[in-house]
Image (cartoon, rainbow, N blue to C red; front, side):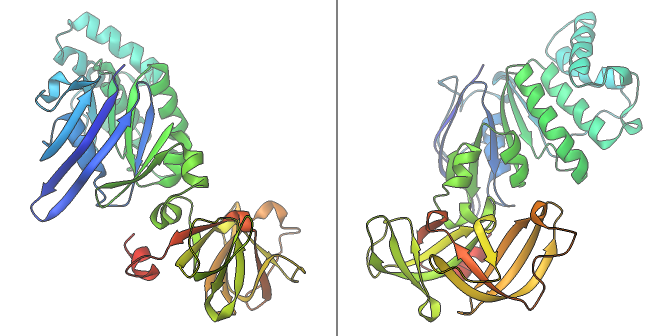
Length: 371
């Protein structure tokens, strides 16, 4: 199965720098999700690997062989764009058989391959249906089946679940990963949906403004983000502006606005250095009464949103900072909210759940608005 390696790949479209010296290694049989907001360069990255867009500089290797001069049809890839248009006049079986036919298989062999793939994507019972007779999820599986039937070992999927409703997207995530793994394929899956990426990927690549911000396992990306962008885009975090005013054996003391001081279980920044303290929403604990020790910041509940599995509270702290806390609804008794708008609360921040970042040159607000 193919591996993919990009070395300092750059692509510009007039004044837009779509890819900026991207270096990335994708192992054989790996399921990789490229995660980023609109305009981050995700589709351009896929098209460069597929051979549909030529990079301005850098090198692309497929199975450690230079691929820059290899035509798309010679790269053994199957590219599934966002709008996976099926042939409307062909049946499901004929749509899937089109790929092996195009690669030179005989009709009997092509239809045998197509039927096998349709059994895998659980559409064998609809082989005689036309595309307009199928649901959106079924059409997506037909398009995926057509890509698999091509015999390509490298699948390039551009927002493959983006056109589906929320419930169906959730259902098909695991199915998509299962199919890729069953066929021992390498998959590169572009998405802007962080939950989708975290659910199905072996490796998540976080992309912003054409640059790789971070790459690693979903657990690693979530637990140890290396930038404000990654911390905010993957999982969502609170950010507090401060300055390092003290050092302890295993922690830094950070002074926030209005003189509030907290401990952070990290000693990565120098005394006097402006920093941003990051803490996940679900790691932000709210209490009606302040404990005697620990990081405690008082405030007032300004908003409460029921999100199904969580209740998200917005709290205006006494130092004029805003924090959000996600409380699992499993802890909510008799259907009543733990706190109401206007309640006085205390935000408790475990030092080990806090993370330090250097203060952005243009300020925190500008950094977050860039998303």
